[in-house]
Length: 49
Image (cartoon, rainbow, N blue to C red; front, side, top):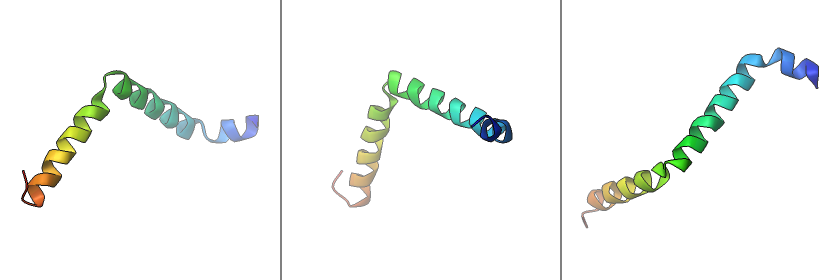
């Protein structure tokens, strides 16, 4: 297991940073903002909104 971690230090660091940013976005409830904006754009595309 340690051999795998030694080989992929950069990948592991990027993965941890990504998980940190995802959790920060969830904490700030940005997933709700993105969902709302995507629904508005989708409705405009099909001519309802």
